[in-house]
Image (cartoon, rainbow, N blue to C red; front, side, top):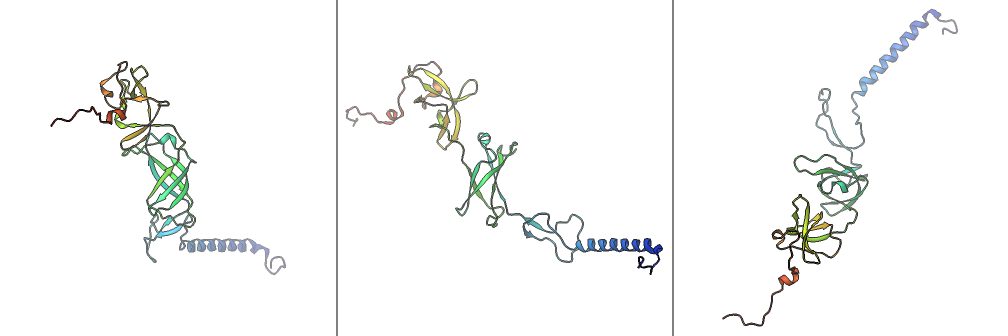
Length: 237
């Protein structure tokens, strides 16, 4: 209208101001309308809604619990003896209570131990696109480590040297006692697996606390010690 001369050009500023005011009013109305729609910051499944329709809410009130099922984390712990053997990226297998197995990858190994258990938290990430793995279920995490040569010995054979080093006492080829340091690889109920014994060795498993380095002993194999001797004599009546 201004271009055609039907409206005075002096009214242009007032008209533009009115349009800007209308746009600001529209934006305010849209913002008010958006407050009635709650949008989650992540994709997932609504697991709980602790409020009711029409309830007045304060800023910061929890209105819903959203669970993102993919990926899912398996959370466990590892002892300080094994922590250095775990690295992010290692394959892991999760076994669930129903016997099913799911493959995953170690995603996190903590540098800080739990103050109560002295173990280190470990997390493995699993694919869960179909949400078949529920949050909070129990599973057993298995991480396959690199193979290592080890020898099984009775737990009672382990001793500490005067310097506090873990090891065993052995009988050498000359029947002299000497201390051999070992490192614990795996711990069983009655036996332990240790490294450091890399050739046939006579480990003293009985009486090791009563000898010291340099003592000469008469070594008897465990098989001979447990085999009853027969002398041919008749037992006493």
